Image 1 (cartoon, rainbow, N blue to C red):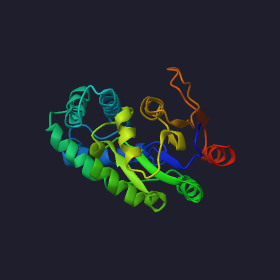
Image 2: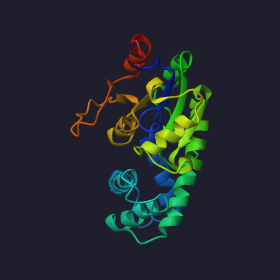
Image 3: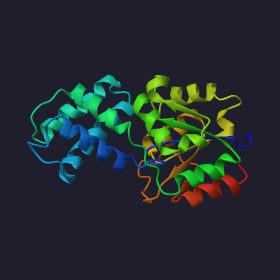
Length: 237
């Protein structure tokens, strides 16, 4: 028996927050602080090379193939693949996350969506990421006005899609059970796969209408905030 929906577990980046915009600003700041701009001016090509390294390492993190500490190695790969002089990856990582923590750009309509949903449900954030930078980004973004609590992989000890991440989050939400929760997020590999692992229903936020080529289990799909709102408030969940 499925219990009445009470709790919304929202992913943050790419779902509510414009991470690409925040990442670009933070990387540009760190790039210049490390003296790399004098060697090769920051550009879209440089950004794309970093994103390739970053995506590869975060995919490994989600699969449990590396831990959070070794994620800084993405900068080592970035320096090599962008033909840049070597810098201390850990220091670049620190400067980058310091800069990232000063951002927090919500997508247009994100706060309105949370405001509308908060009248009916308890909302929580479930995110992989650096705890210190995520918390300050959330504070700057305005989303915390509508959120009961935030669960970050850094602090939980496990990352989405690990079932243990969601088990830990639900254990800290009074009254939460898989049957009365739903995960809302953009990532098939982290959010949708994680929800399926934990036996929680899901809404795949898919504004670009990408194909689910990996056939990850998804309960609902929405290509806009209006559709998310309709699904969660008009369906008998």
